[in-house]
Image: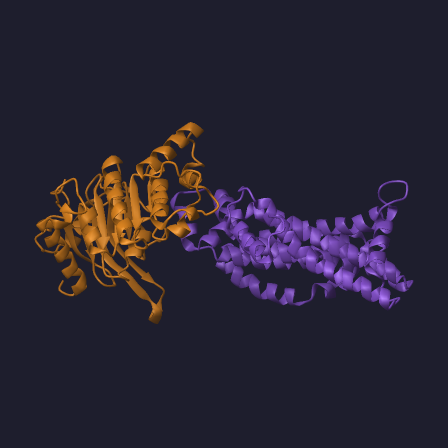
Length: 287
Length: 298
């Protein structure tokens, strides 16, 4: 079965997706999905490797060198990880996660309030639309003047930029809950807190998750941008350093690190979403 | 029981109309403040209820000066042309909507919000069941926050699911069930709540004809088995007669009460023999004529 022809693997992948969770054969679906993901990527890397070997260029190092250099940057030395790993890689991840968490929480809270009350939605929407039209990156100089060049500034800057995506999606998700579902809570005299946590938020969770997903990409972007100015560590700082010193291999290696980081975040969110929103995916397949 | 009801006297099968306005009005004038108008002990009293949506040119006068009462354990269907304000009336009864004029009294208390001991079955089962909860958790949802112990709650849920014929489907999710079964879950949820008053808002409007018959018979069986008053809104004339002890016919909007008809058909009712019964045929014809005239003859 492992060397099934192309046509069969395609249809069985589809069957896996419609199957209920916990059925045997789920593992093969994952393998097929991984295959779809890695095969085009491998082809691209191989072509790149061939191209850079045939016509070497200092601007475009071979992928194998980029990967090797990244491993050297992050791992090794006396311990498992290098100082750079703790100082730069983990700093960026930490800032990103802290900013993301604060921004997401703020977005869910304000978005829910907006979604629940038409009055507050109508009052706040013009302000929200105006503020979020300013590209978040353009507000960095202001944040630096107001809060200085420390970690707290970076975290708040990330939180600010990230919150819009979550806020807009939450407000729309909560605002579009069907009246019957809200009536249900009132008719059976469910307490307001339970109505919020057991009806409103679960009902809006598919849209909230969509917001969290876009926000995770934005969080990484904003973390890097925030480290371009006034920073003494972080992946963004390392990128600017490498540029200044014309260390192109280091630049490429850090970009590779960011790609892996982005994929990892996406994978984690996918896993959480598959667990939390299984009902949503499956109920939509029924229709 | 029948003779004491001002709104039903003289309206039995005869085609005479009686909105009961004058009777209720005199009762209202005589009663002490804070007590319900109408017959003492009535489960529901609708007292001069009117409702208008919006203001000015776009205002929609949905219901106009409705007066009726429902005694405990009655099963009353409310039928009228589509857009007749049936849903407005039901939302008013449920306390989800405050009427522009008049008041609704449930079990002797004036509705200022949702009354105690009331459950509702919504028309749109796909929206009223929570898709992230299993069948048993959906049924337990309204009583999950109550002071009952866990075994007590489980017993209520099990009994309700058994009553609607869904034993063995506890762990399924609503979207894994057919439309008729989903509406059974919604009915079980209302039953587990042990309501004194059950409101049903066109509950079978979106299921196929055969499923519908099964669900109608389910309503008849729970009507006999549980100690509660049922108010049932429908646009289906046959259904209104088949299920009820009384049929309230509404006019086109602004909806007024065209006639309050007592239904006395042989029990137990049956999808085939009841529908062949000349009394049934006469009643359904009478209701149909009232609805098609839209209340113009009154």
